[in-house]
Length: 209
Image 1 (spheres, one colour):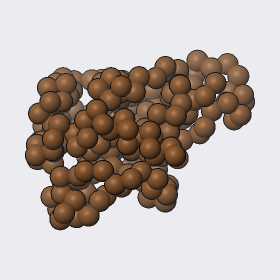
Image 2 (cartoon, one colour):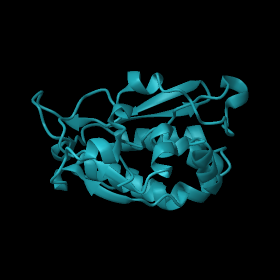
Image 3 (cartoon, one colour):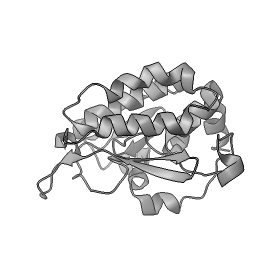
Image 4 (cartoon, one colour):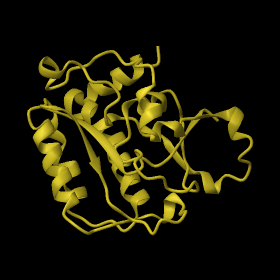
C-alpha cells in the first residue's frame, strides 16, 4: 500500500497534494475528533493584499466529536462570502473562467456535514488535475497498526503551525499577485489549479524530486 493518511481538509494545502501525487491511495481519517482553527474547515488563498483565510462555520457544542459527524452551520452567509473572495482573488488567473462553473455550485448548495463537503470538493479538484486516487476511510481499515509501515501520515498538514514549518519543495509557479506579494507557498490547492490549470500536475510531480 503506497498511501497517505490525511484529515478531510477544506481545499487542502499544496504540500498535501504533492504527496498525494506520489501515492496511489488517500486514507481519510474520519475518526479523530474535530479541532477548531485548522485546515479541516479553513483554507488559505492569495489575494491582492496577501493571504486570506476562508473559514467554514460549524455546529459545535464544545464537546469531542468525530470529524465525520461535524455539521456545517448555515448561520450567516459564509458560502456567498467564500465564493466572492475566491472570485476576487482568482478572476484574473489564467484558468479561473475555465473551472469556475465546476466549483460555483458548491457555494450555492447546502451540505449537512463538513466532511462530505470537503471530500466532494476534493474529488472535483482531483478530477480537474488528473490526480484521481483511490479513497479509503480510516474507520473501514481493520488493521490500523499496519498503516505505520505502509502509509505516510500527513495528518499534521491540518495544523497551520505544522504547515508553516513545512520545507517548501515546490518550485515557484505563476501566481496572479506575485509581482506585488512575491511567491506565497503552501496555499490552498485552488491557487495551483486556477493559476496553472492542467500544468499543475507537473508542479506536483516536480515537488517530489
